[in-house]
Amino acid sequence: MLTSFSKKRMVVILTMLFLLCQMNPKAQHSYDAVVRDSTHNQSSNNAFAARLTRFDVKPDHQAAFREVVSDYVGRSLEQESNVLSEAYYEQEEPSVLWIIERWNSKMELEKAGKSSSFKAMELLAKTALSKQAKKIDIKDLEPISKQQWRSVVRKTDDPITIMLFVDAKAGTEHNFKTVYHTAMPQFRNEPGVVTYQLSQLEMDSTQFVTYEKFRNEDAFQYHLKFPPIQPVIDYLNTSIKKQPFQAGLHRLIEFAPLIRK
Image 1 (cartoon, rainbow, N blue to C red):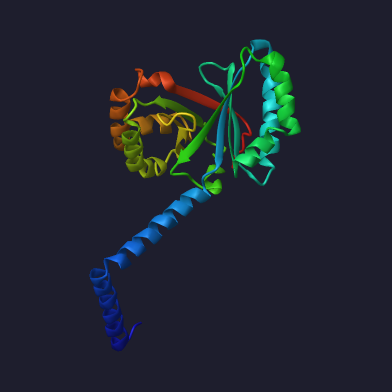
Image 2 (image 1 turned 60 degrees about the vertical axis):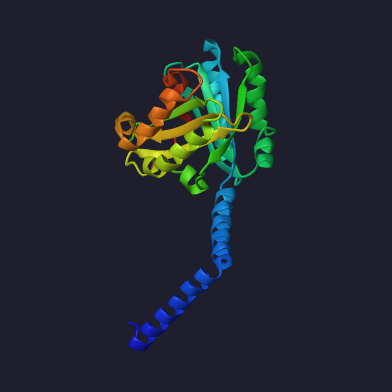
């Protein structure tokens, strides 16, 4: 417990610091700059190289192609530089597969594309796909850590992952990011949310994609009725290039790596 003398001394010190900031605005500006730099550095440290890859697979090649994709995902997760590696099929169109991956750097991402497991996937793709695979490089906004990306669902869960592609009208993209900046902490704290991330396409600053992993369908339905989502819905109903916004929604079911706790 502080003595009476120590308390008085602390008050004097705090008062002097306050007066110093009032008398010298540069001191406060310097402090603010340090805070901004610290925040920027924290975000930069989590600014992983992220990529989505879509595969449209012919019906008679589904099993074989899922096998090579699963092998690539599993081997990627063994690498220290890997942050996230998952594979999904679309619930409403199972012939469409997605690999969602994040690596510590762009160099490591490109290195993964030269691995033997990726080469095996590329080789089979020549006959298994109905059209060329589509790679989408993205930049995470308000990124999370590797530990958060590695959050796993429980054995009792029946998870579903939602991807929503958003094509914003030019000039409104800042509004979209602002709306999400407000809502994101609340979304991430929902009891049924495992992971929630908003990203921006590297090739087009007006295009975005969300990654929303829920423990089950009930958790997703709760999210749709969660009051903080309303400003996001209002934006989607008024400020994207093509309606309805639900056309950009993809319901995904994971088939690799299927880690449960």
